[in-house]
Length: 153
Image (cartoon, rainbow, N blue to C red; front, side, top):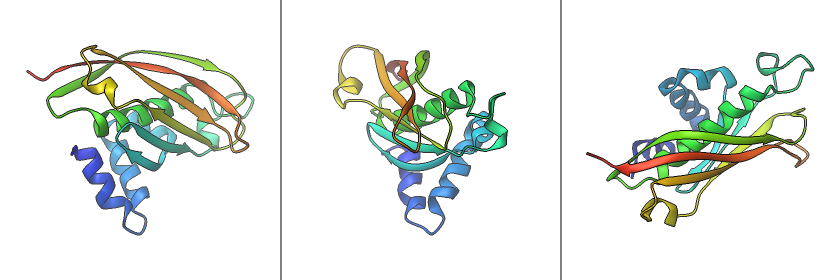
């Protein structure tokens, strides 16, 4: 089991544990702290977090700005990748393709998802499906983050 998944299992069972995990995760890549992610679920092949709608992530029309949304998707993808990748492999992001489909007018639930076979197949190009959803269920951003997955040296 990976360090991220171990930490999630240990902390999420505690009072305020998900909050503690979210803060610790954000310290590994400090730019994640700018969106103040609140992780809600992490398991192999799936991760989910909430970006709270607040002034610090607003754009000029007071919706959650595009880069904050992308940061949320990337944080979810990172937690998923760390929780899913076999111990003999490593990953690095190689690209992101997203479409902004609606205004982000509420807190946004960001999720990342893969299929188990993607990590064990011979193709080093792994596509992680990502999306962000408003409180009313409307998808505001969706796409794929491409990872390059190779054997550890």
